[in-house]
Image (tube, rainbow, N blue to C red; front, side):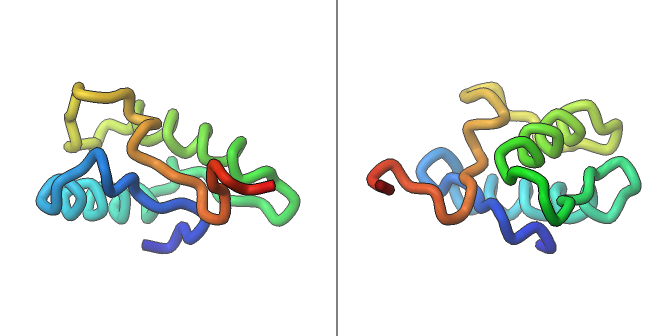
Length: 83
């Protein structure tokens, strides 16, 4: 994947779901519909736009209603214990 500012939440996805979502996101990142991360843009703002764009993307194949879609994404470098 080209987007290095986020990872997938390992606790919510089994290995097959993770591989499937990664493949789907890779296809989405290659489209013109995927937002670009601008140099001065906040990562959480970009991730919100990315998830909304992915959710509305016609090519989306990942369908999982156990959790909201944004729950599967984690911003890199941000942890609950950060001070």
